[in-house]
Length: 192
Image 1 (cartoon, rainbow, N blue to C red):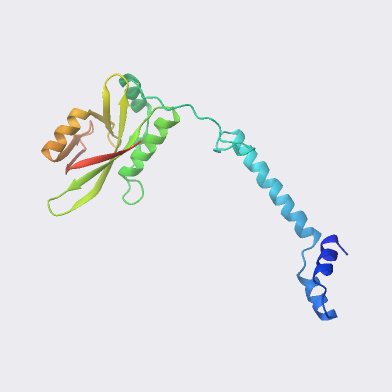
Image 2: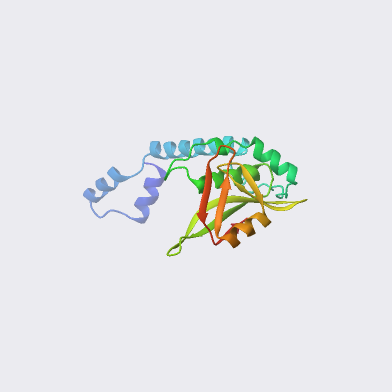
């Protein structure tokens, strides 16, 4: 008789032999515990392996490693990042990979290089409806101020150009490929 079974019987003595047989048929065996122990060890080993590759937010002791602070890039660093980032080459797929996906990927790629970038959600208005209609990216450059990026086209524009678009009520951007956006536009919000 195992220690677990003996402890259970001491606390919950069956009143009849039939109750005791029912207990024995539902009890855990040592094999069950050995399997669970092995599964825990494998999971721990996988987590340690993933952590050693830097893919976990916490180390094996549960501590979160210190992340270097995000830096505002210079204008030249921002342009170099945009030129090297290939997010704009991805195909737009309705309901699968859209403007907010492009923006999220660019922000994450910039953050991975310790470059501070923000997610911009634009508010559109067609005269009868107002909706959150488009997502782009913003950088605060250390030497030239705020610059927006249309991540699907790799087109940048300044805060002054954005304010002009708001004043005109049109978000108009033309990419090198000739593809363009031209929507009614009344404002935006930034998530750093």
